[in-house]
Image (cartoon, rainbow, N blue to C red):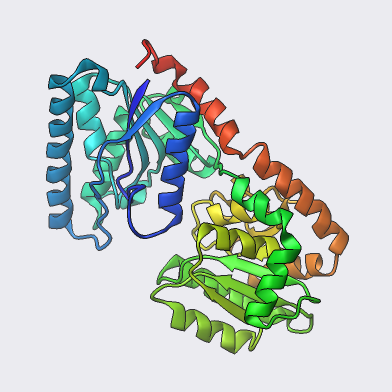
Length: 383
């Protein structure tokens, strides 16, 4: 089946790396592995971060017009080039999908959303236009694919029927992380030389953008938590960069002086090498949807310590691939890190389980099989 793919928050062709862009590309790859022909419908970005109602209205009008325009071009063009399904990734109140409902309605094709979210508290607020747009798209969707149980609960209130909601757990292509894990000692030696690190002590790792908001709050919580562990020998590897880097560096300098090594922004292979070189990934995940970085760390064989917030329990299996504490409990987070720092055998068991989890249940091939099964109901004729 030919599929029109669209990501209203950030196109897979966007120039700035992010988890959202990475997941969009993974979804396109998984759909192709499932046997479909996927084309990017548009790079139009509906994201409005400030709660500016006139701007939201303008984006809505532009998006609806573009959806109709695309549908008209396909309808009037060659039949073989017409999509048989519209697939949107990540629609929510700040970045609703204005194109998909229009285009799919004009063409009379199924409309699917992966990672839609709904929060009733946004009604009547600064993003009311976006909230209503996202809610209407959810109501019109023929299938809603949910990465987490947290999202699924919110959709039940507005979906046309419970039968239109299905689970598609977070997944990744484990290959680059597995390759890095296979040369763990080399990765560790390289980083030790480059950053003058003591390779005889455990290394903690985090990889996240440095920007105001939840990311900065997570970095602050991490600094406070690790401040409770200064009696133990360890170093922290920090992969990432951004506008809040000065604040991040200041937080670590105050809480854990001379313990953090800042690696800067890294390529995918560089991030994989940083994970593979480390012994433990630690991230508080403040308001994190689920955290692709946590899944990537596990793919490299690194157990995770985090908080059981939102979708994190869908990517970290507590007691099997990592340890989770209550959201916001920095002392408990530090206690779990201490537990694993002092128990090398437990870390090793969780490392093996994390690799198996990422390569099996959360692999892109598993996702492709599941997507193929879920979309089979719409494949009336081959593309």
